[in-house]
View 1 (cartoon, one colour):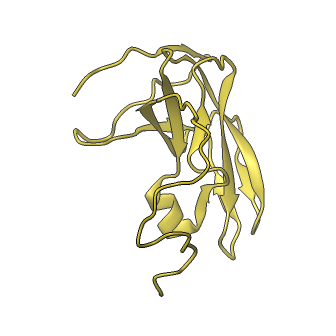
View 2 (cartoon, helix red, strand yellow):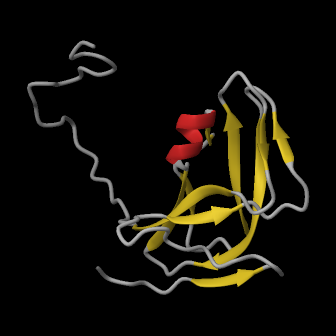
Length: 146
Protein backbone atom coordinates (compact mmCIF):
# COMPACT_ATOMS: atom_id res chain seq x y z
CA UNK A 1 0.00 0.00 0.00
CA UNK A 2 1.34 3.38 -1.02
CA UNK A 3 1.45 6.22 1.52
CA UNK A 4 0.62 9.75 0.37
CA UNK A 5 1.53 12.80 2.47
CA UNK A 6 -1.39 15.11 3.31
CA UNK A 7 -0.39 18.24 5.21
CA UNK A 8 -2.60 19.23 8.17
CA UNK A 9 -3.20 22.28 10.31
CA UNK A 10 -4.94 21.40 13.58
CA UNK A 11 -6.73 23.81 15.89
CA UNK A 12 -5.58 23.76 19.53
CA UNK A 13 -6.52 20.52 21.24
CA UNK A 14 -7.54 18.68 18.06
CA UNK A 15 -6.04 15.22 17.75
CA UNK A 16 -4.51 13.90 14.56
CA UNK A 17 -7.04 11.68 12.72
CA UNK A 18 -6.05 8.03 12.88
CA UNK A 19 -6.84 4.60 11.54
CA UNK A 20 -8.56 2.59 14.28
CA UNK A 21 -7.46 -0.82 12.92
CA UNK A 22 -4.64 -2.07 10.70
CA UNK A 23 -6.97 -2.76 7.77
CA UNK A 24 -9.14 0.37 8.06
CA UNK A 25 -9.62 2.34 4.83
CA UNK A 26 -10.76 5.48 6.62
CA UNK A 27 -9.30 7.61 9.40
CA UNK A 28 -11.78 8.61 12.09
CA UNK A 29 -12.40 12.32 12.46
CA UNK A 30 -13.86 13.90 15.61
CA UNK A 31 -16.26 16.71 16.44
CA UNK A 32 -14.38 19.87 17.40
CA UNK A 33 -17.10 21.43 19.54
CA UNK A 34 -16.98 22.86 23.07
CA UNK A 35 -20.43 21.71 24.15
CA UNK A 36 -22.85 18.97 23.04
CA UNK A 37 -24.91 19.56 19.89
CA UNK A 38 -28.41 18.07 19.66
CA UNK A 39 -29.66 16.74 16.35
CA UNK A 40 -33.44 16.46 16.28
CA UNK A 41 -35.23 13.98 14.03
CA UNK A 42 -34.49 14.79 10.35
CA UNK A 43 -32.31 17.73 11.41
CA UNK A 44 -28.91 18.32 9.81
CA UNK A 45 -25.99 20.34 11.11
CA UNK A 46 -22.47 21.16 10.03
CA UNK A 47 -20.10 19.88 12.70
CA UNK A 48 -16.57 21.36 12.65
CA UNK A 49 -13.50 19.14 12.95
CA UNK A 50 -10.75 21.70 13.60
CA UNK A 51 -8.78 20.29 10.67
CA UNK A 52 -7.49 22.00 7.53
CA UNK A 53 -5.72 19.96 4.85
CA UNK A 54 -3.42 20.40 1.89
CA UNK A 55 -4.30 17.44 -0.30
CA UNK A 56 -1.87 16.68 -3.14
CA UNK A 57 -3.04 17.47 -6.66
CA UNK A 58 -4.58 14.39 -8.27
CA UNK A 59 -6.27 13.28 -5.02
CA UNK A 60 -9.40 14.02 -3.02
CA UNK A 61 -10.37 13.16 0.54
CA UNK A 62 -13.83 11.68 0.90
CA UNK A 63 -15.78 12.20 4.12
CA UNK A 64 -17.88 9.13 4.83
CA UNK A 65 -20.32 8.12 7.58
CA UNK A 66 -19.37 5.83 10.45
CA UNK A 67 -21.30 2.57 10.16
CA UNK A 68 -21.81 2.26 13.93
CA UNK A 69 -23.52 5.66 14.15
CA UNK A 70 -25.68 4.80 11.14
CA UNK A 71 -26.80 1.38 12.43
CA UNK A 72 -27.19 2.18 16.12
CA UNK A 73 -28.50 5.76 15.92
CA UNK A 74 -29.58 6.55 12.34
CA UNK A 75 -26.86 9.20 12.02
CA UNK A 76 -25.30 9.61 8.59
CA UNK A 77 -23.95 12.28 6.24
CA UNK A 78 -26.22 14.28 3.96
CA UNK A 79 -23.72 14.36 1.10
CA UNK A 80 -22.05 11.01 1.31
CA UNK A 81 -19.37 10.74 0.36
CA UNK A 82 -18.49 14.37 0.78
CA UNK A 83 -15.56 15.47 -1.37
CA UNK A 84 -12.70 17.65 -0.19
CA UNK A 85 -10.92 18.90 -3.29
CA UNK A 86 -7.15 19.30 -3.46
CA UNK A 87 -7.43 23.09 -3.80
CA UNK A 88 -9.67 23.58 -0.72
CA UNK A 89 -7.86 25.01 2.31
CA UNK A 90 -10.71 25.70 4.73
CA UNK A 91 -11.79 23.76 7.78
CA UNK A 92 -13.24 20.31 7.19
CA UNK A 93 -16.85 20.12 8.31
CA UNK A 94 -19.08 17.07 8.52
CA UNK A 95 -22.76 17.50 7.61
CA UNK A 96 -24.55 15.10 9.94
CA UNK A 97 -28.25 14.22 9.63
CA UNK A 98 -30.43 12.36 12.10
CA UNK A 99 -32.63 9.85 10.27
CA UNK A 100 -33.93 8.25 13.47
CA UNK A 101 -37.07 8.97 15.47
CA UNK A 102 -35.07 10.12 18.49
CA UNK A 103 -32.83 13.09 19.21
CA UNK A 104 -29.10 12.41 19.04
CA UNK A 105 -26.45 14.27 20.99
CA UNK A 106 -23.06 14.86 19.38
CA UNK A 107 -20.51 15.21 22.17
CA UNK A 108 -17.20 17.10 22.01
CA UNK A 109 -14.48 14.81 20.67
CA UNK A 110 -16.95 12.21 19.39
CA UNK A 111 -15.96 10.33 16.24
CA UNK A 112 -18.39 11.58 13.57
CA UNK A 113 -16.99 10.47 10.23
CA UNK A 114 -14.17 8.87 8.29
CA UNK A 115 -11.64 10.41 5.92
CA UNK A 116 -10.64 8.32 2.91
CA UNK A 117 -7.96 9.40 0.43
CA UNK A 118 -8.82 8.66 -3.21
CA UNK A 119 -6.98 9.07 -6.49
CA UNK A 120 -8.83 11.35 -8.91
CA UNK A 121 -8.84 10.89 -12.66
CA UNK A 122 -9.83 13.80 -14.90
CA UNK A 123 -12.44 13.05 -17.55
CA UNK A 124 -12.19 14.15 -21.11
CA UNK A 125 -15.30 13.99 -23.25
CA UNK A 126 -15.56 12.87 -26.83
CA UNK A 127 -18.79 13.94 -28.53
CA UNK A 128 -20.24 11.18 -30.72
CA UNK A 129 -23.51 10.65 -32.57
CA UNK A 130 -24.34 7.36 -30.83
CA UNK A 131 -23.09 4.98 -28.15
CA UNK A 132 -22.28 1.29 -28.40
CA UNK A 133 -25.13 -1.10 -27.58
CA UNK A 134 -25.42 -3.39 -24.55
CA UNK A 135 -27.99 -5.90 -23.32
CA UNK A 136 -29.00 -3.46 -20.59
CA UNK A 137 -29.31 -0.49 -22.96
CA UNK A 138 -31.27 2.30 -21.21
CA UNK A 139 -32.68 0.11 -18.42
CA UNK A 140 -32.19 1.68 -15.01
CA UNK A 141 -33.79 2.40 -11.62
CA UNK A 142 -34.99 -1.09 -10.81
CA UNK A 143 -35.04 -2.54 -14.31
CA UNK A 144 -33.80 -5.89 -12.99
CA UNK A 145 -36.55 -6.22 -10.34
CA UNK A 146 -36.36 -6.10 -6.55
